[in-house]
Length: 244
Ligand code: URA
Image (cartoon, rainbow, N blue to C red; front, side, top):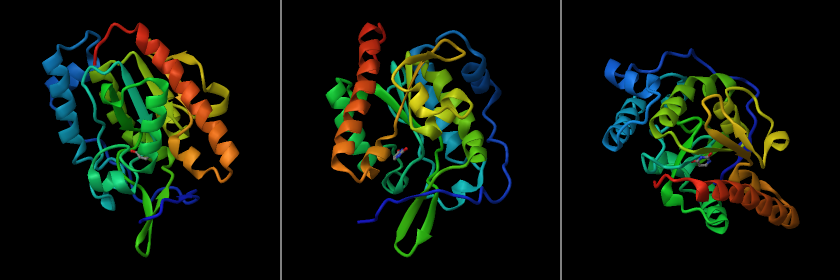
């Protein structure tokens, strides 16, 4: 089984950033500038349009080594949007977010918090797998700020299409994308925060963080805190009138 390792990347990125591929004017107007809710069909069409455009994204160099763009998935009117860091080894191959070990951990915690994963839209701040090839292993590397910024327009477009009641940022990379700036997890976790557009946001840890904890007691404790954070999301969603 391919291992998942977390290394810091001291070197920054190579190459230059290029603009995102252009969407049609109609699509951009609908998605970016519309304050009104789009009708059902239009919102899901918009996500499909976005997914297709993102497949050819060359906004940063990460596409070169990744298998494919891993776009978000879930109902087009999901009341909850979960944001992770970037696809891992398994997600890169499957083309779907959170299907590997971190996804299993997330599924378990969501279930315990009373949240149905199928009703949430799940995406990542960065949509290509960043790794270092070491023999048969692909070692996960944390995305840099330029990579997070280059990918952020996709998150913004997903957010504008879905208009969820709540965005949950899991981990530092997700928090940086959701808030548009570096946002410390411990100082901000566990409470609802208003984003500029009025959408509520919640910051918590990334499920991979729990997988990496070497100590079983710490792992159990941190897992409970993660579930507690998700229960805050569940409580807000119970008040939501939106069906996914
Ligand atoms: N970690 C993430 O942040 N996202 C995934 O999709 C999988 C692992």
